[in-house]
Length: 138
Image 1 (cartoon, rainbow, N blue to C red):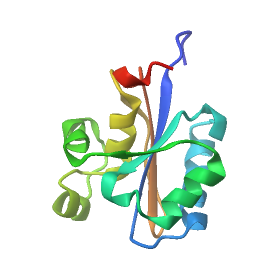
Image 2 (cartoon, one colour):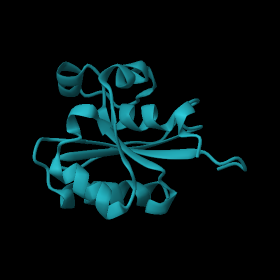
Image 3 (cartoon, rainbow, N blue to C red):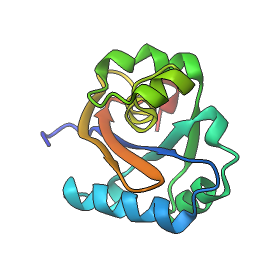
């Protein structure tokens, strides 16, 4: 990436009760594909209703990155930037991809996908870069 530091956000989507190991596996696959290390990720983001998922909480803890729940309207606000379209997710959540929209929303201004959704049997992961949210002043 170019000289000015972009904030990298990792978006997670998963089925209910997905294990931290399965979530961690798709994260590892995504980081490898994007040639990034866990330390390059500023925040892990997911849909607000996934913030209670033990696997998501544990995976974020293992990676040592903060976990942020993204409100449904914030996911919808970036839906047109998503490249992966899941009819099921669109029906259930109102967005084409939870992982992609969560990453895009968390990456902040001028967000763009750097890795579209990767999936395993129960979890999805996507990476986005942006200028960070206005309140992120760090």
